[in-house]
Image (cartoon, rainbow, N blue to C red; front, side, top):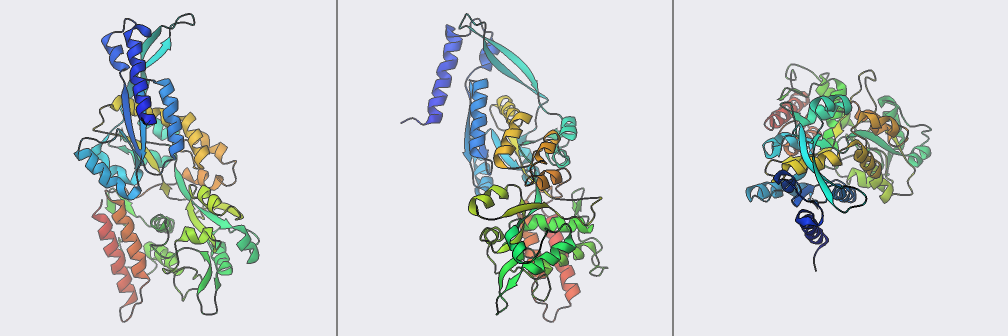
Length: 459
């Protein structure tokens, strides 16, 4: 039995044959005939909503009946291997979803966006005839100037390399805080905190221990590396808010000046604040490395505050529909100069694509303002477009994420974010280990310096 995709491909070939054979288009020149030959685009994605992408592909086929888009969802941990093998075997996809942290690593595998594409448009000559005409349109793509003016700040910084655009986003996410209102009520916390000091107090009130000193309810999940999904981003956030210059011009800087400093160094302040939540001797102790995954604990109703992204909202609602769930923006040490971390994917065209013109046109179509609005509404994610954020701010649950997407940014623009992420996770794990006979300050300095050196190797 033929698959739907194969059927669509066959129907497309028959349709175009009929058009060019006299049943539709007559007297086409060579350029017009070439422009409506059947094209199949293969599109690999990771975390994008497949139903929305398939809807876009169907809409695009109605617009360009000679183009079929086949969509494949690839696991995050398999993407790099499969993509590398596909390129080596010359069977690479035409379009891929790329996390912005992957762009530098894959830059040589991707095709920068052209200034415009040429695409055929087929339409009826008039209402009294079935005869079709083919017109070739020149369609502009977003320019670097468009990115700077129309998109939130991080997009231009992330996707533009050597003044060329390597992908366009469907959404841009930023860190926010989810909380369980019922846990706060039971702990006597009448209002959600609005700053770090109030947050620390709320965590102490909502953390509960057994008679043996075991955590039975966590105020929050902070301090560790491997059981907190967004640990890398949260640590980066704390560093940024403490005034740490994490990286600059491809150089890792967060260990600069550490050898001659004490624990007042901005990097120390950030890491001490973060790890204190996992130190049993600290008043804010509420989490440790033996706890399950942080999101799982929050969904089970065993945690008051969870640091996550807007894309976590539908998951939490689906897994814990009874939870009295609310969201608040990330707290700021300096409200006049707010900071946050951006997390998002872009849609890119592969350099080896045999149909780069059609591939970039589909990316352009998919990431148009109209379709971005549909996608972000369906998936509960902040829009990358400035013109759409004001409307999203009217939703009380979306507002914290949409507003902070305006100033969220990325510092990591290296070639292996997984190594960098693992280095940060190991760093906090090592900082939490007992000191024994070691000099505490000296040991911790070396851990941070070694981490900086490990991350630098990936830049």
